[in-house]
Every structure is written in structure tokens, then in C-alpha cells.
Length: 417
Image (cartoon, rainbow, N blue to C red; front, side, top):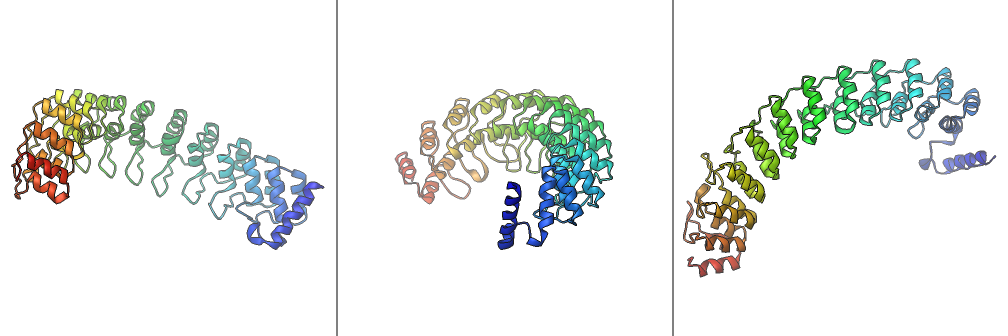
């Protein structure tokens, strides 16, 4: 009796405020059918079907079959199918079918019943995903087995380049990855940005998956749209063991990306000393420079990673500008005022007046970036306050142009004019 009163109240609200309800009051039978299907009330579903309820009417992103599938009510599913429910009818708002909702909800018996009744296993939703892809993203191994045994396309790729193996790599346990590989998943499928599952696993430091993918035939030197390889991804994210694994399996550890960054420069940017160590031991070119003329030691200095700078100097990295021109490590460290790096470089014999492009000295860099403490340190180390760049600019003119009065006064006190 109470349930009837609640339903009556609901229908009354729908009649008065249809924008808050399923639709119009004339859909009372369908409303009750969907509610009964969701509750698994077989008798109520049967009665409503006999009274003429439309089993395929969608109300508020649901049909009776969709709801029953999502809740795993196998007997209700059978009743609705006997009454003519469309087994592959997709919800308009998201394109998902009863099988998709059953799969995502890990309703094994419901999914099996739908498949046995002829449900299409590879229907795509609005995101271009099939049931297997959504199930894989949730790590539902048993459901994955059911779908794969029922002929699901293990290598379907949507418009964004996503596929089941990629979703498993990002979200699922390694066991799900193994399932897909055993089912014939293509390990070299790439996303629209060119990333393969090996890029993803390497970037996440998932060594077990990295080995699985390599053994399955993954291209260890595959490049994405930024011309970055899996070892680049591993190096940039600080995964030393992964970098070592990829090197052991024959990758090219010196390949630059489209900005000229090598894996070593990427590791230096992040201050990943253990990665730097692995790469240096593998014999990478320590003096490779990016398109701006920044080497690994210069990059580490610019980002303030004193331990990385120290390691690279011990590995004989040069403190001079690269042959292609560019920044010295000392000038790079002056940009953001990393005093510990500056002190280390000066102690190691860096040229306090070493010039970069356009004849700029470290003192000019510090003066132009408002680094008063760095200016003090460089002056103490004997920096030339009179040095001029190719355009005639000086440290004093850089400070004046920037409106840095304290620095300008300090430079004048040191003899600048």
C-alpha cells in the first residue's frame, strides 16, 4: 500500500512538473515498468506488460531492459525480451546498450543472458567504446573473459586512439593486460598522439608491464607526436629501473624529441639523478644540446637541481656553452637565483664572465632578472661590471631597464657606469 501511495505521489508530481519527472503522466505504465524492472519484481513486470506498457520506451535515460540489466535481474530480462524489448536499444544520451550496462556493473549472469539472446558485443557508445573497453577500464577480469569468448573485438580503436589494452595499461591490474595480450591485442596500436602502451607503461614506471609488452613485440623505439620514445617517457618521469630495462632490451637511449631534448636532458630537467646515472653508464652523449643550446648540466642548473649538476660535473660535463651556442650552466642558474648551484659551479671553476649568445654574461643575466644575492655572489667572485654584450648592453643597463634600483646601486658601487 505504501509503495502504491509513493508511486501515486510521484506520478502527481510528474503531471504538475514534467520537467522534473520522467515525461508526461500518460507514461504511467512505463514509469512503473522501469521501477519494477529495477527492483527485479518479476510479477509486477509481467502484469504491466499485460496491461500494455511499452517495453522499449526510454524515460530519463533508462529503459526497462537497461535497468534490469544493470541490476542483474535475469528473470526480468527474459520477460522483457519475450515481450519484444530491443536487446541492443541504446540510450540516446550516451549510446550505451543493456549489455554495456550489465558489463560495467559486473553482472555476469545478466551479460551472459543477453549475449545468449543475441546481444551485439561490439556496439559502440557515444565515446566510441565497446563493452570490452569499458569493462577493461574497470579491471573486471571475469567479465572480460566472457566478452572475449563471445567474440568482442580486442583491437577496436576509437577516434581518440583508445583501445582495450591502452585502458588496461592505464587503469587495470597486470592480469587484465595479460588477458588481452593472450587474446591477440596489438601491442603497437597508438593513440592519436602516437603513444603506445609501452610509452604509457614506461612513463608510469610499470616494469612488469614493460617486460610483457616488449616480449609481445612492442617497438622499443616507437615515437609519439612529440618524437618521444618510451625511454624518454621513463626518463622524464624519473623511473630509473624502467630506463634500465628498455636499454637492456635494445632501445636507443639518445634519441631527441622535437625540441632537441634527449632522455638525459629530460632527466636533468626533473633532477632525476638515478636516471641520469643509468643513462651516463649506458654511454649516452653527455654534451647533447637542445634547440636552445641547453645541455643536460645546463638544464639541471637552470632548474636548481644541485645534485644532478654535481653528478654531471663528476661525469665530465662541460661548463662551457655547447658548440651550437647557448647557455652556460652558470648563466642558466642565475635566471632563478639558485645560489647553491652557483656556488658549486664557481667552486668547480666555472668562468664567472663566460658569455652566452649575444655576448651576455652571468652578471647581466642576474641583473636583468632581479637577482640581487646572485649579483653579490658574482661580484665577490670577480665578475666584470664593465663587460658589454654585442649590442653594447651591460649589467647596469639591464638593471636600469628592469627598474631594479637596488641592483643598479650595487653595480654602481662596484664601479659600473
